[in-house]
Image (cartoon, rainbow over all chains, first blue to last red; front, side, top):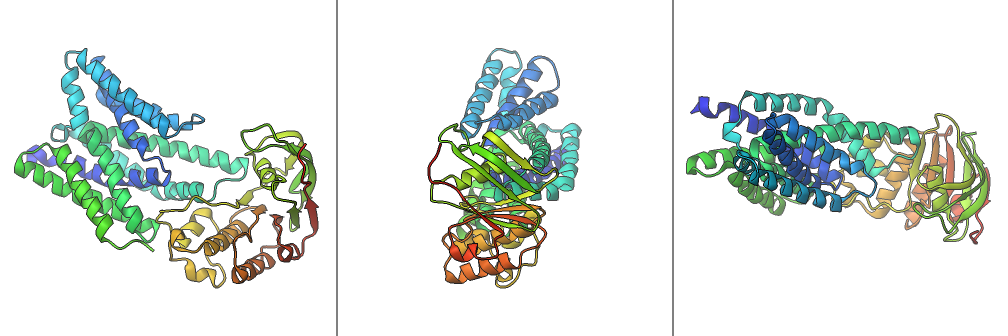
Length: 257
Length: 190
């Protein structure tokens, strides 16, 4: 049992730490819908790559990065993310319907395939964990400063743009890794729900990040156990668990003051 | 000279009309220059032009090379529903983390749990002490009660002396705080 589920468990655990951190950054930017859009694009990229007999991870990564960089197009906003969600969904399903392995692959992207992940997915998650922890304080400071005291001179604007680009690429990689390992909706749930609860209850930024990661990890551990115990699809159990857990925290914990 | 505007004509961001100006002014290190004028004259738009967010349609807007600018805007819609304390805010902006009383008592509160006046004073402190050579303050005494206005006056009186300060205000008490020059924008637009 441990041999069968050890690597998938660790991969999912790393993602349960990483995706809520991505969630607090995206919520701070008021761009949480980007997570769903980029996850859809990552899924489409993976399916396109597989249809062309190429590895799925680079395909997902490139598509996710293109989606994330789309935020720099003037006038891009939630409408653009809505457009990307629909484009990613349509591309995924059309390729699925017109390639021999497509349907299975598209289902895997949408529903997740955590139990089938191996050393490559775990390796990618560990590298991303190291990168995220190394860059986290700088990104926190950059994103907070940009939201609260916008840059007022060209040099500072340019410095922040460079750092924001690095953040965008890291976010794209996190969302692509999540989509390929736990599926599109489970990735979106880990980005959206822990940060949603933490932003209401935390008293400061550090507590918000810790609370979001805590909700993500507890939700993941509970979902992993429940899915195995009752032989249920993991991604759906994770989404349902996070919905209940994040809503309970948001309702029961005192509002941060 | 940190900032030198010569016959600048500008317009609100994203629009080429109505035009504002022409206006000339300068701010040197250590100077406090006041910019006044009736509502709608385009004072905030002029600050947007200085910070590169509004076009300079004619004239010259020159910032000395390497000048770092801090802008404290009039409206701050950016901090609702954020788990950000006063301490987080000062750390993120690089401002002095040790403000004078009573601002230091508010540092462990979330910004969205502070009153509008408390947030405004904290922002002015951040603008005055974050890394920068030129500070642009847009109507900092708007919506402040008498007590908060007195605290604002103290912050400005005790500000770091090496920075240039361009202060947009109608408040006569604020304008009396040792302004080196006062520039009045005309009501009409060209």
